Length: 377
Image 1: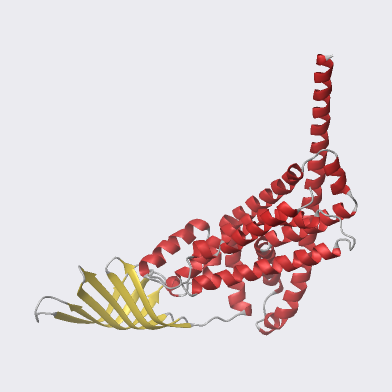
Image 2 (image 1 turned 135 degrees about the horizontal axis):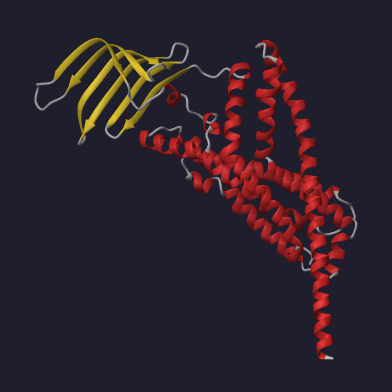
C-alpha cells in the first residue's frame, strides 16, 4: 500500500509538471505574440504621424525617397521600438492578462493547484528575454543605426546651430584650450588659446587670431600666432609666427558633442567619451552619463512593469478589460513622466545620473511589490 501511495504521488507530480509546462507555453506564446502585434500596430500609427509632421521638411529640403525609407525610417523603427519596449510590454501584459481573467482562465489556473508566484514565472521569463534583447540592442546595435538616422535628420529635417561660443576644455593634464567662437560653416575657431600649466604655474601660452580645422591631418592650422614662454621674474619670451600647424587632443567632433551625439555611440565609445569629457571639465558630459544610465534602466524596467501589469489585471472585473487598459496606459505615461522628470535632477546638478535615472524603477518596483501583495491569490 505504501508503494502504491508513492506511485500515485509521483504520477500526480508528473501530471502537475506536464500541466505547468503547457500553461507556461500558453502564457509565453500569448505574451510574445501580443507584444509583437501591439508593436506593429503602434509603430504603424507612429509612422503615419511622423510622416505628416515631417513631410514639409522632406519636400522643402528635397530629400530623396530612397534615403527617407532606408536611411531614416528603417533606422527610426528599431530605435522607437527599443526605446519604448518596456511600455509596450506593460500594455501587452495588461491586455492579454485581462482577457484571460475575463475568460476565467486565471481562476482555473489557480484552482488547479498552481500558486500565484509560479504563474508569474513565464511572465517574468518572457520579460527578462525581451529586456536582455533590448539591452543588447541599446549597447551595441541601435547606436550605429542612430548615426545614420541622426545624419539624415540634420541634413533634411533639423538644421542645428552652426556656431558655438566660449569653449573651455582641459584637453590633457595641465593643458587647456579656450575658443571664443567656432563656426561650423568654415570650420574655424576665433581667438584660439592653448595654455600649459605645470605645478599650478602658467608656463606657456599660445594665442592665435583664428584656427582652421584640417581634416586631412586631423590637426589645426593656427594663423597669426603669438607664443609666450613664462619664467620667473621679467624674462618672459614672446615669439610671433604667421602660421603654425599643430595636432592636439581636440577635434571638431568634440566641439559639437550633445544629446544627439551620445545616441550614436556603442557602449565602449560612450564610456571613453565620458572619461574624456570628465577630464576636460566638459559640461556636455551629463548627456553621455544620462544616455548610459538610460540604456541600462529602460530594459530592466520591463520586468518591474510586467509584475505590476499581472498584479493589476489578474482579477476579473465586471467592466471587462477597458478599466485595466485605462489604468495601464495611465501608469505607462506616468513612468515616462517620471523618467523625464528624473533627468532634470541631472541637468540641475541635484543628483548624479546613476541615481536620478534609476529613481523611476525604484518607485515603480515599490508599487509593483504593493500590487503583488494585494493581488488575489
